[in-house]
Image 1 (cartoon, rainbow, N blue to C red):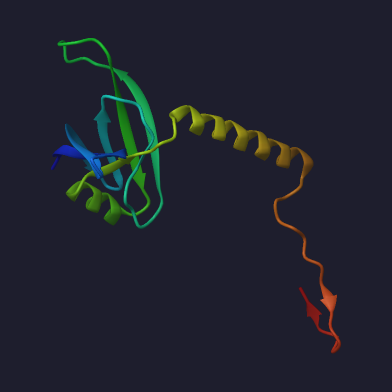
Image 2: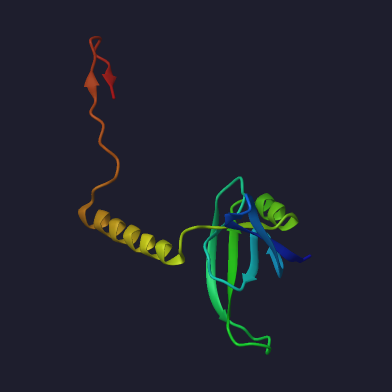
Length: 139
């Protein structure tokens, strides 16, 4: 069963109230994966008890009325219950950050992980075991 409308919450207020808008788009769910499209590219987040992964795909419009792009958003929920909850009440929150900020963060994480693999170091500090007065090791 597909939901035909999604609520988009924007990160600003108009006359002291949060700006929300209804956008007509099919919201499809298969197991823990939910997919829908938006006419704009923005980072989004949803209410979820457990973690989820969001992927963005830019596609050409093919409705024949006007040229342009749509952005397909796929959310992979860790819990199927979170996916069911989202489909029963589809509300997304648009983030302040730009998509380019996310891609630059991914590049920095890749560089850091490559450096760690080359040097063999780890993020954790090594604990020094010391003996106390009774001769027991303490960390």
